Length: 118
Image 1 (cartoon, rainbow, N blue to C red):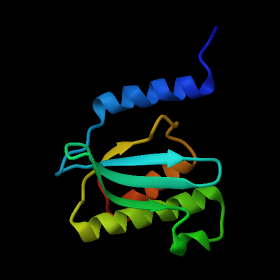
Image 2 (image 1 turned 60 degrees about the vertical axis):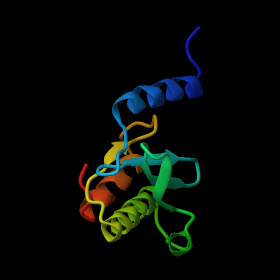
Image 3 (image 1 turned 45 degrees about the vertical axis):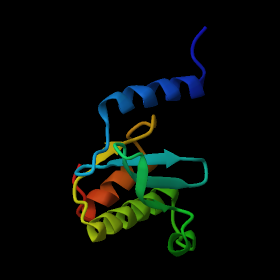
């Protein structure tokens, strides 16, 4: 019998995390995608702390109109702007077991447009 969808995603997430590790110089940009929203966190794995976070549920983005992909792009730009203010210009991208497609790709492209490098 094959893996369920959640088991498959968890296996992919673990495989990604073997390679993607956030340090103080290059923290990890972790993406979580739910049916209704998209969330991004910048994490320092050495300390085990979240440095910055942005989501589609933030007050300034909750009123944004558009498709889910357009809102994901806005979240990417927001997290990149927060990173630039904090002095972070390079991150390791962690797609969280999702395919690099659709909303996850839009978030990544939005972050790159705002100046974040990964």
